[in-house]
Image (cartoon, rainbow, N blue to C red; front, side):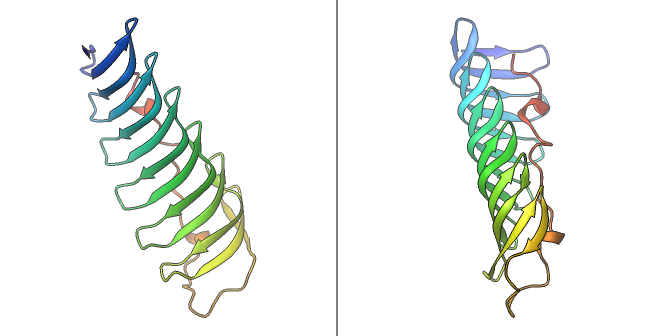
Amino acid sequence: GSEWLADRSEYRGQFADGQKHGAGSFTWEGGASYSGDFCEDALQGEGVFSWADGRCYRGQWVQSRMHGQGRFEWPDGKTFDGKYEGDKKHGRGIFTWPDGSKCVGVWLSGKQHGVGTHVSAKGVPRRGRWKHGALEQWLEPPSADESSRTPGSREFTSTSDFTASDAGPVV
């Protein structure tokens, strides 16, 4: 079935008891869209959410929040592959920059936290300890090949600023 809302949003997909339920797609007036599973009018299960500005999340959803395993992609080429909880990076993951450098570790409430590894664009790994998103200390000295640019001077883009609710309700 299909449903058109007063704000010009559109849903196409399955319904149960008058609610969006099953496979479907929803497009908001502002250009954001979601394609995937719905449960009782909520984004629930596997799905792809695309923002009008080019950001995209592919992964698991619980009650219209990024929750579980997923991949977030930014238009500038940054990516995060890992666990989400309540729209925030939470658990093991890999944040990759467009130049190929990356941080592998654990995130807590959207921020890197604990022991992790920064891998330079040249592929040189270096272990460090992060606390609430800030590099606390390196656990090993830099190699002769290592770039002077460190994760302490790099930005981890927050996904918690960009939630599905930014697009508006699906009801």
